[in-house]
Image (cartoon, rainbow, N blue to C red):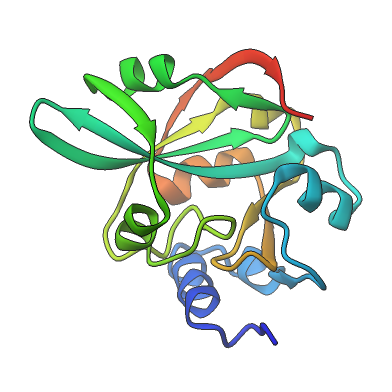
Length: 171
């Protein structure tokens, strides 16, 4: 059974409190089922899919170096990897496998939180999330989410605001 005591969830809650976002930490919800997709999270919460902040970890290549890139995207669409590469100044950006995601975030795909990682991850925040008064993000485990705002996501992650969609609907 997943609880607020789960190590990844506890780490996120501590990061939120340290950032002065105790209300977000207190708002962490443990859901009945895993919500590994924006559609599943939206359905479980009773919100629009666009109000879900997908945490997508990519492999960003800079010459011979590969670093993680976190894109917090609206669940209503897909992120364009060419756009992300240009925004990050990377040669290319591609999907990361589960081992890469866990290595750089300490969390499993489907539950990656915006923060609470072993080291700060370069983050791009989808400006489409600004349309929603409340945005829901993963809280370190596929069964956990927390409420926040677009502005707080930018502050919390030190992320860059940008348009990241490729125009395809992801519903």
